[in-house]
Figure (tube, rainbow, N blue to C red):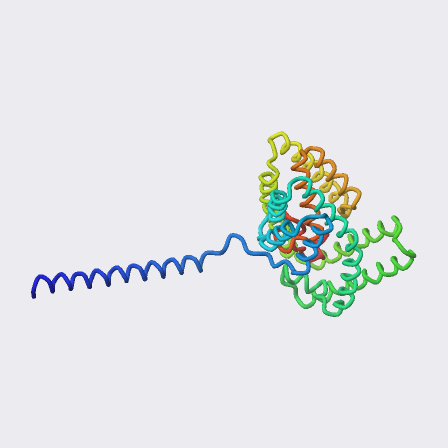
Length: 322
C-alpha cells in the first residue's frame, strides 16, 4: 500500500468518525429537547377576546400602531404565574403613563358594559348543561374512592338539602334577605357535616391532605406572581413592606371569616377599597401598570395562567367544599 493510499484511508475513516459524532450529537439534542417540558406555554386566548381588548384601544384614542402593539403583546402571553403583570408592563412601555391610564379606563368601561351580558350568558349555558353536570358524588369520587353505597347516600343528602334551599329561596321575592342568606349558609354547613359522616376517617384524611396540597401549590404560584409584580412595578423595599402588611391583614380577615364559618366573598366595594389602598402606595407609573393589570384581568381573565393571576381551578364541593 502506498503512503498516499494509506493517508486517503485515514481521511475517509476520520470523516466517518466526524459524521457519526455529529449524528449522535443531533440525536442527543433531539432526545433532550423532546424529553424536557417547556417552562412556559402559549396561552390560547380566544380571538374575540383579543379583538375586544384591542378595540378598547381605539376607544382610548390610541393610534393604529399602538393598537397593533397591544395585540402582539396579548397574543404572546404565556401560561405562567404573573403573565398578566408582564403584559401590563410591556403595554405600559409602549403607551407611556398617560396612554396606559386611558387604555385601562376604556377597558374598564367595556368590562362594566359586558359584565351583565356575560353573567346572563353563563346562566343560560348553565341551565342548558344541568343534565350533563356530574352529581356531587361523582365530583367527590374524583378526589377519593367511594363505594356505591356512599355515592348513593351523598346524592340523597345533596338532593334533600337542595330541595330545602330551593324552598327557602322561593320565600323571598327578588334578592334574598340577610336572614335567608344566613339560613342558606347554615344549611350548607349541615349538608357538609352529613356528607362527612358518610365518609371513613381515611377518606376524610385524604381529602384534607389533597386540600392542603392544593392550597400550598396555589400559594406557591401566588408568590411567583407577586415576584413578577414586584419586578414589573419596580417596587422599593418600603413599598413591598407596605403591600405585605396590607396583604397579611386581608389574609387574616379571610382566615377569621373561615373560622367563624362565614363564606368569604369580595364584593365590588371592598375590592375597590383594597385597590385604592394599594394604589396610594404607588407612584404614577406604577399606578398606571397596576390599574391596567386589573383592567386586563376583567377583560381577559386568567385563561389557565395560574393562581397568581386570578382564580385557579376549583376543587370538588362536598365534604370539604367552601
